Image 1: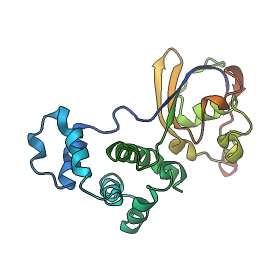
Image 2: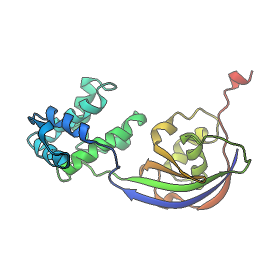
Image 3: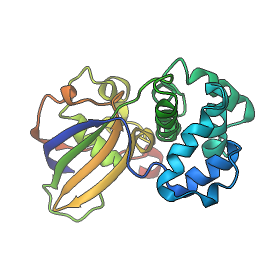
Length: 225
């Protein structure tokens, strides 16, 4: 499939809107042993949560947060290990399960705020771009398609191009795209926005801001037969 790509904007941020809501804050207050959280005003929930968190050691708070968000996919031992690693390294970039990076980032950033920088600071990039299908055939743009198209405007030294070239070229399946691109939104009129960790993509990685490209889907040779 042939596309025309135009990069409109690349913006860096250290927090994501909507990562946490008032129900999350109330539940976390209970887990951090703050009584009667339901009586607090919504505007005060985050402030009181930070005060409650401060009564715990950083690794203890990390374990509580990890258990709240990821207990369905992480074992008790994994949570314990991560709760200590989070203080030393950017687990939201380095953890082996790419699909967990988004949640690990949100947990890390809340703890980073609560402890005034004791946890590593994370950054993500919001990329707004135009993606026009030159074949004029209707289709739903997926994270995989968007990433394959964007990668062709990036430097050869970009991490995605270096580590995932076979997936980008359609030689292998590309399930990693779902974990690498944290959010994909259609803004209207062929304009899209993705949220992606700066580990994978930064503004300086773009060598082209307007270009044509061909996206190759993966075709299972067994299915072809």
